[in-house]
Length: 449
Image (cartoon, rainbow, N blue to C red):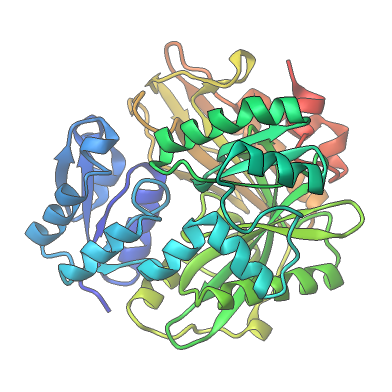
């Protein structure tokens, strides 16, 4: 096991990792930017090192600065959290070259999972169902038009290096594809430094289902059930729950086995998710694999009792998984809502500011993952998340009631600050959500305006 872990991240996930390290008896180093000097993760860590100014590319994304911080403090491992450098194979390679363990998959696995075209091809070879489209990047507009004519409209263009719901454009006709193709490529180049895109048939009505997997260095891989992430806006998840109301035991077992085949095809190690689209007839298609811990991982922790971040650290240290597939049991129901400093009535525009009041709900089955306290700043440079509210109960109806109570107890106030709490109340009260019949178009169809 390691002795000291540097957390190359910020916000609630940095706090979450520090707590997991403490449970393992490991000391921690918080990397922070000048904008986060007073953040909770800095206060909780055993040591903290400033890695640059507020701009992410000069701090949390600056590999020499992060590696330098690890070397100066004697850290023998780095946990990247999610976002920032968490899926950067080059960063993992640099860690290894400096004798530092990257807590995540090996670089070659991240390269395969991160290149969506390669991942799609490998998953197809492993027998996972794929939506009609390409397994290689489309090299020109003419090639894209030819494929789209063959698979039928609507189609979706996706950045090969994309992730986190970014780099995705839909086209319902040849005219739209002509207009979208160049824009999607240029956007992918600007955001990911890679203009390549691939194309597949667009499924307008579907659920977004992801399976949590854990794989160790000894060849053992298990899945820990699914999370339903269908409540989203512009491909950004807003509410996640597990188990999915759409899956029965047979379909869960079938999709779980498919997820394991996909993870094994990549030689996966660490915590990751295999993501699917599911239609109302029970047909499902592979979408992508995320080679990192997910924002919504607490949902799985609540229904399985497995500490995913602790397992990540143990796997990176070379320890074998302590559970087999037969040991995994899903108990009760859990829902997570993301409380962001955003104004839902203004297109979810960020509202950075200072928290004058932050009062967390409590009671059995209620969990808050946050880095915020009264007086904390929500800076404009990063993700606007204030907290994740996760609730658990014996079944979904009871879980919905508990979530409503928790939302009523939660207080997040500050000058000019708007949050997504009113939006979550609207979701919770909507009959489609209460019936467990949400699809990825739920927000646009039922809650727009």
